[in-house]
Length: 143
Ligand SMILES: Cc1cc2nc3c(=O)[nH]c(=O)nc-3n(C[C@H](O)[C@H](O)[C@H](O)COP(=O)(O)O)c2cc1C
Image (tube, helix red, strand yellow):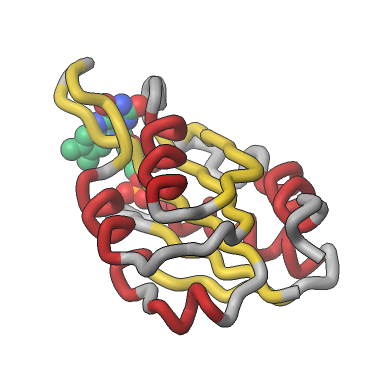
């Protein structure tokens, strides 16, 4: 199985979360490819059996807290995902609030089937990676 882990990271924490997820996927015997979300192409999506999309939480004080705007912009540029099993994840400092639900909604609008989600604090970006990998790899849509 081929899993694409696409991430938007400004200072490296979400990249670390993506790396932890990729390692956990490989430990399960699948292949994982890491890619910046902004550089993810239609071919990258097409060549993977499942996708994980992660970003950092961006807000202003407590207003407008949600997925990093750069991540939503990159998601808009993705091709139609045709029901592809997809996991969403994020890293945050204080509280992710509705970040995962918003990211999920944008991906579902692209036709993704979101099967798992995880928010990890920036102090522990690898938290939850093993569970996320397990749920992504054992999703009924992934065979
Ligand atoms: C401009 C800016 C706004 C942020 N807003 C929030 C926020 O509203 N809530 C929160 O929990 N974290 C917020 N953070 C913290 C980041 O989401 C967190 O540090 C994240 O792990 C950074 O990921 P990265 O290292 O991949 O860029 C903000 C960070 C920045 C730079």
